[in-house]
Image (cartoon, rainbow, N blue to C red; front, side, top):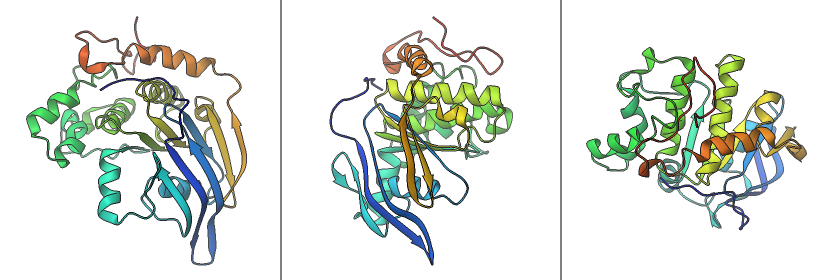
Length: 271
């Protein structure tokens, strides 16, 4: 696992002229969006506005009817399902509202699952997965099954699983929706900070203004069109999260990495 700062190079993810309909309902109507490495984007809008459809098209889950989706300059909307499935496993990471952890697996194997699906031997995959536990405040929780984790701890396991393959982009669909306000802020601050420290782009679909404020930019979608795209004016919270997350960068090479407190403590990394 390596870290990098926000890149000023060409966008890592681009959606251009995206159109998508379901029957007579237009979900996307010519959406344009781009995201650089290390940048975070919040997508907001009322139910049915098209924000989840936008995420699905950018993530290769669905194909747009028209338009292009490019990852590092490569068109993914033209790929077949096997290629897009491979891309979602290796170059994208996902964090969902409920975490979607497998209840029969301990936390470390849940994190290691994408690696094992890619053919990495179980022992090696679990060892690599465990490197994320201390930096994410999960030290000592490696053997716990999801049913024995708090909501915040389970979402941190989901974040570790999203990061374990070193993705270029992470997609988070209402990642704090099932959490109380305090735990939700801990999770989003951690997600934004550590994603940026790893040089990955982040797309967050959310209804929560407080969650959106942690991101570099916010796009508001209405009737399938971006009605507003603005950069977060106060970057202090994000800068603070990045400073903390930077202490966890180079995760594999540190014997005693800094880590965030548990759910019962402060959300920041200890110095």
